[in-house]
View 1: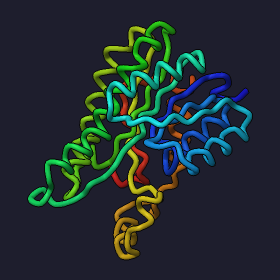
View 2: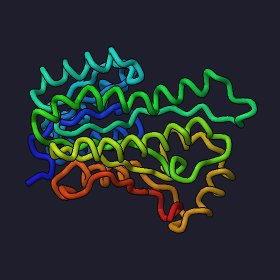
View 3: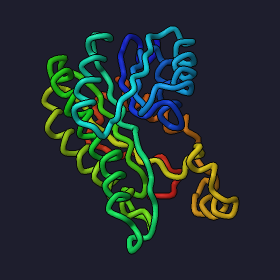
Length: 248
């Protein structure tokens, strides 16, 4: 029996990176996938094909996760087309790094909107559906820098720390309806975003990690499967660090 057989998940920002790995891992476990990205392009179409190869239903929706009205509309459309929403993975995120003294208001607002407001938008949109079902799992992608902070990432760290507070509050509000809310805090994960870093920077990161390597997207995805499935039926309000021991 597959762990997510017959369930339906919404995954935001899943056309690449960690989101894509989550979508593929969920599909391998029998989950139907509705995923969003800012645009519906060739990359999104390729991801659709990869997911469909697991013999599950899949559709990509072009949607700006930071826009409240767009989110309400796309979730209503997904609910209509798929019939249920059992899992929400709030994964959409961006970075606009820089020292605080040089950080612009636009850099601050953009990161908070995409990383934090989107989590509010989608959670708010699925609430009534999950409430009526009397079940659901919400998984929010935070970061180790949301736990410990990081120089030159005040906006990103603040957004990811905000996700942790939001996750715990939702867990306390929604628990009465058997809706679980948890966060994952990835560390240095090998993605397209980190691939552009110079070798010396990557080496310095790896030396800080007890396991002496960056993580893989699928290693984050496997923890998402745990939180999405009945394996974690008594787990809510938690933050799981997936960081090779970088945060202890």
